[in-house]
Amino acid sequence: MLTQQQVSDWERDGFLVLPDLIDPARCDELIKRSEELVDAFDPASHRSIFRTEQQERVSDGTFLASGSRIEFFWENDAFDDNDDFIVEPAKAINKFGHAQHDLDPVFSAFSRQDPLPELVADLGMADPKLLQSMLIFKQPKIGGEVGSHQDATFLYTDPITVIGLWFALEDATINNGCLFAQPGGHRGPLRERFRRADEGGTEFVALDSTALPQLGEPDLVPLEVTKGTCVVLHGLLPHGSHPNTSEASRLAYSLHLIDGAASYPDDNWLQRPEMPLAGF
Ligand code: FE2
Image (tube, rainbow, N blue to C red; front, side, top):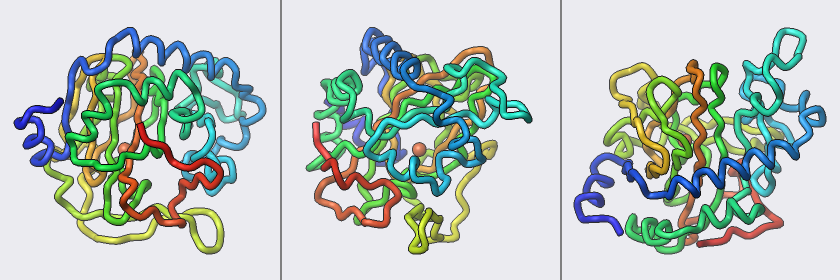
């Protein structure tokens, strides 16, 4: 489905912006399903677990098990000093993940819709496996920053094969926290790996000291996109997003794929022992 020009853009830039890839009605369907899942979730049962800085990376059993579940993560700024919600709980969710693409029929159908298999084949992935998914709310006013990173840090394979498909379920602008990425930055080295530590919990392991461009630096350019756009991200591409300080939410769905031919280390944070990876 990709033109030769798009394939060369991908190789040069490490990302591709594909406007109107997804029917807006399908975006609405995924938003509706997400709201149903949030409504069915009991915040009180999980409130203390995720009320920490770096909540999605804490060495917490729930986080480490989320590779084969659907778990909910809070915004840090959703609580006051007494740990009371400052917004309604449904507006305090940062994201949920990381296996709805296999566990929920609506998410599964979205993740496997045409032309995604053809798109991923055109990018050169021979045996795509759907590894991880996140519904990211980027809530109005409190949607937090996602610092500059490379996805291969978190979803490492040997060789590196991870590709991210980032779907704008709503318009994403500079005002509501769109993606920023470094064109050509995928040609740089992997800086660090996030892994399960031998002594339990998780840790970052430094691999290369080359500086990663940070949010606010000119190397990272904004990717403002409209609802229904798919942004394809190379696993080594530095990217991130600023906080959302606007009144508009910025819902996005991200799906990460790896090539089944690559080896997947058993110290990666995300493990799914009871649920083998599936393709399209
Ligand atoms: Fe990412």
